[in-house]
Length: 261
Image 1 (cartoon, helix red, strand yellow):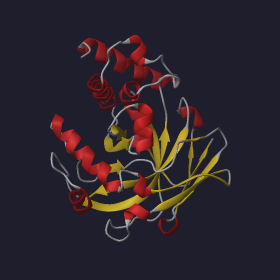
Image 2 (tube, rainbow, N blue to C red):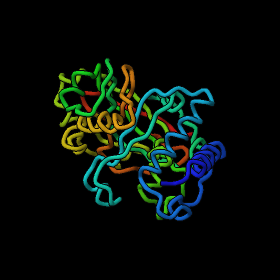
Image 3 (cartoon, helix red, strand yellow):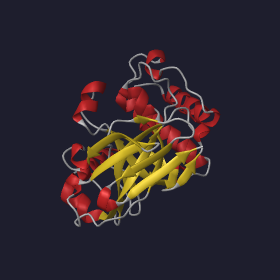
């Protein structure tokens, strides 16, 4: 594993890149042999820096939940990042385009927990029982590391590319609908760009939440009551430019919109 001082230096570099809205060269190119465990150590150190700056953790995100993306990145399991209070927007918000180094949008469902969920043996049934409600959400992807040649280790270090999220639509109890069949149409400037069904997320979007609870238990952590858990995208990332209006139609679950100014 990388030396703790090197992990701290990388975390500080990513904090500075976020402040200046810039990207840094590939971490893996500059740190040969850097592992997934190193990457999560960087992410935890980066999160500590944000807490120290007064930001509050409000949830987690799960990525790489589709087999296609896992094959493309050469990793056989999902990844995860953290969500802070300043990363959450309500539907209809105007989002500052210059807040991000680059902007891509994914369509997801967010699970809001009513009680603590911990591993190491959490199941989909435990997730559904622990969930207060599920609500449509858009994830705004943002990378502080150059995109070309980026590996899963680079992405995890960079908080799994979590930039922000937009939450909206109609909240539903987890047993009110078959969450596998929640579908969405994603539009940019009134033109449909992507569509998908939530079952593409590991067969059921709650599966990723169970995986995350079990993964965190290895570090003595759990998912806490009130946390938002972005369960993983069921569309490909859609690039967004300044001035674009994004609209996701979840049919019975309503819509989520935002505009990038």
